[in-house]
Image 1 (spheres, rainbow, N blue to C red):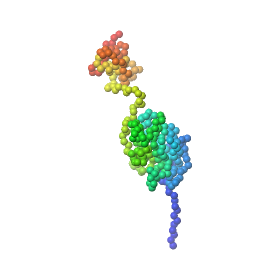
Image 2 (cartoon, rainbow, N blue to C red):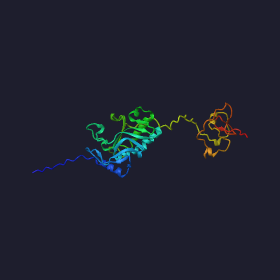
Image 3 (cartoon, helix red, strand yellow):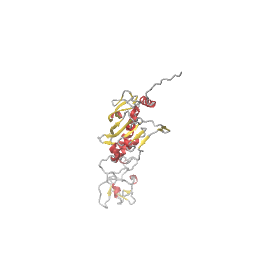
Length: 314
């Protein structure tokens, strides 16, 4: 007599690490709940899709950065987005444009679907609230930096900003895919926290296309419409000046009305008694006439470039 056992059909279960990651993130309070970040009811299915504690997110950075629509995300993903915005996106925007990002355009977060919506493919990280697709950014002045346009057709600062945002994301997310990685990501940057395994240096990460050297350095200052200052070949130590001759008068003019015949004024020169930045150039003087530096000194420059105060009159 044989006895056959009765099998019990069990529904698929999400991998345990996903719920564990959510619980750890919440326990560590890596995300602060607010009017813009609110916990919602558990999403359980269809299938293994879902989140233990989904968060409904409308703004990030304490409300300073708006999302174009409400997004459903897990705690780990929300925390990573916050950190990336604060430590990569905002510093890059300030360096490139002199203003902050105030809005992120999301093209999707939670969605129970396969990778790239390909039938038969394994489930996307979007199915677990563990991914976001970013289509662009808005600056404080209303300027939109849209990935599909600016990645290849934007100006140098726009292109460099998007590449810095993409490359910087590779340190905060385990998967980063942008235009050029494949045909599905031509118009957005995909970021997620998929588990690709570990290495001796941390989680294995996929970042495509491989981050390249930035296209152009950030501007050193905002364009105020003024010409750049002239480049000075060397600093001039006025504490050692003795006599001046007519040659190289342009260098002497850079000192303006400084009286080199008098003791150094600490309120003007500082303790080091050195000039590190030249004042505005004085108006041109007639050729061959002495240069007057201060009320008592006829000043010129020797052939070797040194200043000489000359004879001091009463």
